[in-house]
Length: 423
Ligand code: ATP
Ligand code: MG
Image 1: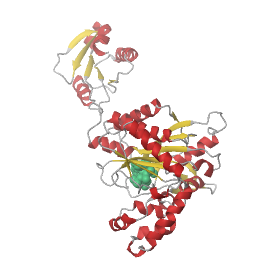
Image 2: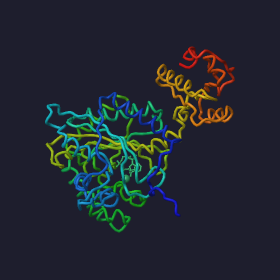
Image 3: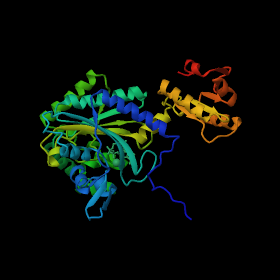
């Protein structure tokens, strides 16, 4: 019989990898929570309409990347390709945005996202993001705060030399429309020299041509009109403030006037944190302001800004640079070897230790076996210490402590003294 396989681009996370994820997730969630962001959880499956109306009909995601199917009642549903749209929907539905008297919401979420893309290093069909969103604040301080938060996160992870920040302002939808017209006019005159993808985008989403990876297209764009010349005064001032705050907070950045991002809902600030250490999949965190999305989805006008980071890419990057804590793959501290008719006493001892040392990772041998085979298991578990309870020790109320990773001599002590050695 043919062996069953996971769906292409949807990976298992085996126990030898999960410590890396647990470490990264705990650092990220700790940092975002120290800035006062609260967790929100929403479903993996939403109505297709939600993503069409928020991300935009003519974006890559909606055109060709969504996992969409009919529910049993005939309604079209989609596995979420990103979190922002769901977050807005959940906030609206939960009346977080204007009915509580506290307009400001600072939220974070974490979990799998689904996009039908060509799987490769750092690009999967089920991938994972941690996202952060702030609602109800129009001023540039919160844009800057989100970037200061991410900069701190990189410092905590040791990644500060490995990532750089690019920022841009897309202005309002009015200035984007004017810029779009100018860009289309410029590119129309050079239409024949564009790559096929960009030709197609001329009609659907011309700003995305700026993002093209095609070299000839990039060369054509060298003299194209610049978005920064089309910004309205307020957007210009807003962007200047973001930059001033970043400078004051000593967060280095470069302004990249070609940065547009692939989703329709952005306005004003957009940004990406990029690394050159992962090949083509170099963006590890991306986001921006989306002041019109809440009203676009039927809510009261509510300014909003947020970002999402790609967890697969961050795990890869931390592994590549050897930045995980040294003992990360050790999951057992103490292995309790119990030989002979001593299991009741072994349980008592194990539970006593768990009581006294709540963070101790203690594995008790289950399944029996000779002294030799249990010691082998103790060694393979990665534990630093083996506690040996044989019938001899048990009858005298003693326990033998053997150090598995150092040359320290083993010792037999009274069970009551065990916390002197372990805790
Ligand atoms: P890219 O340009 O790499 O396709 P994107 O603009 O589509 O990224 P966003 O929708 O902004 O990405 O998502 C934020 C982050 O999530 C990305 O910067 C990346 O780190 C991660 N990400 C996006 N798509 C994938 C994927 N298919 N597999 C793994 N990570 C992804
Ligand atoms: Mg993409």
